[in-house]
Image (cartoon, rainbow, N blue to C red; front, side, top):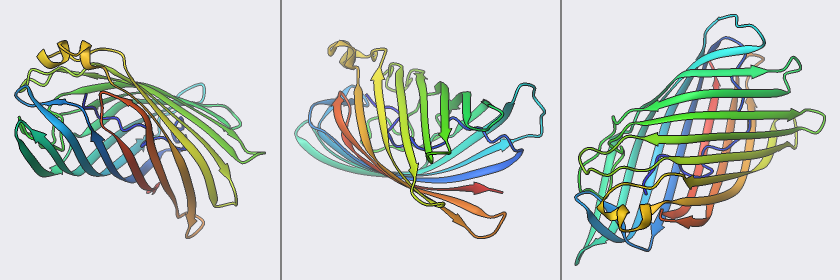
Length: 287
C-alpha cells in the first residue's frame, strides 16, 4: 500500500518539456503531506497498525543536464537526478499500544539515465519519454512506523505531453507513468505496480503570473504479495486528488529568471492508502 507517488504533488505546467537548449537546469521542490488511514494497514514483521496518521516533509534537489548533442528531428537527450531529504512523523495503534515515531535523513535517490524530448518547430507542442530508476538509499528500519526510504528498487517508465496555446496563454500538460517495484527483502513484502496520471491546466493572468488546476490519479494495476495482502485480495490501492496551482516568474535580469510554483493537492477518493493533503512549493531555474 505504500508507494513513492503522492497524487497531484508533481503535476504542473511544462511536464512534457525537455529543454531544447543545452545546459544545466535545477529545481528545489518542498513537499509537505499529511495523511490518515482509518483501517488496518500492514508494516514490518507482518504487524498491523490501526488508525495510522503521518506527516511527511520532503525537500527534493533535482537537476537536469542537457548535453550539446545534435539529434535529428527536433529530439533532445537529457539526464536527470533527484536527491530527496526527508522527515516523517507517524502515529498509530499497534496491538494494545499507541506509538509515535520520527525519522529524518536522505531518502531514496532517483536517476533518469534516459530522458528524450521532442518539440515541434513552433515550440508549442512537446513530448517526452523517460526511464527513472529509484534506489533504496534512504533510511528504513524493519517494523518502524516512520521511514524516509522504502527499501526496494523502483523502475518508472513514463511519457509526458505539453501543449501550449500562446494566443490564449494556456498550458495543458500530462504525465503518465508506472512504478514497477522489487520486493522488500527484509519484510518479504512486494508492492504491486502502480500506474499514475498527472494533469495540469494553467492560464496566464499577467506576463509573470499564472493560475491553474491540477489533478492526480493513481491506480494499482498489480496486487501486493504478502500474507496480509493475500488475505485482502492483493490490497490494491487507488487515489484521486485535485487542487489549485499558482505560478510566478521572478525576473531579476535578462538572463536570470526563477519559476516559483505553489500548489495544493487534496485527495478525494482513496482505497487501501492513506488519505490526505499535499502542499508543494517549488523553485526552479537554469545555471
